[in-house]
Amino acid sequence: MKGDLFSGEHLVQPASAPGMSVQNAKSIKYAVNGEMLARQGAMIAYRGNLQFERKGQGMGGMLKRAVTGEGLPLMTVRGQGEAWFAHEAQNCFIVDVEPGDVFTVNGRNVLCFDATLAYEIKTVKGAGITGGGLFNSVFTGQGRLGLVCEGSPLVIPVSPQQPVYVDTDAVVGWTAQLHTSLHRSQSFGSMIRGGSGEAVQLKLEGEGFVVVRPSEATPQKAQQH
Image 1 (cartoon, one colour):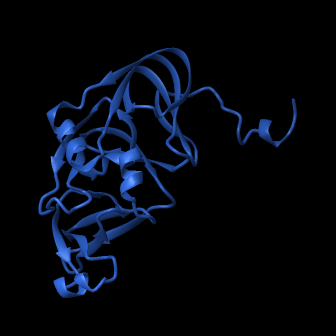
Image 2: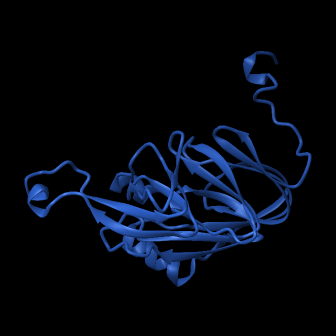
């Protein structure tokens, strides 16, 4: 069999070491030797001796799904083998979390991560019920985190002298030491008259980075993720 489809660009090679790597722009490959975690339904192929087990979210995760229609439904992958993960052909990226790091990320952007990472679902400080990021997943420890994003993300530096305002439906995540609050950019009268459609943003202050995707999640899309 010949043709561009069977060229080296697309042909999968055996893993050289355990763990996570980017297979291509739209998928992540994980060489499993023990245990790892991924979002439910994200596995697109695997080989070897692997078992997939649904993982409960706990009360925090259940509350998040009830309030926002979103969540972080996870599965545990155990055994020895290789698995490939993707989500709706979104772009894939890997974040290396080091000891002392704290990375807050929207659950809809989590694809897979090392079992050595600790995570918990927390309320975003300063974000009321109107905030699109009411609950987010906070990752700590040491390991790799695989993310998905519609389009190419923007990584915007935040400094004490220059806070950043982001759309609550477009934010992917942010680093530790950033303070969050809701910012209203329109008056109530302007909102009644129609406004700009950008009435409330998440304000981030401090020192660090915020990651934003170049699209907004509609309520229908958010519920599907």
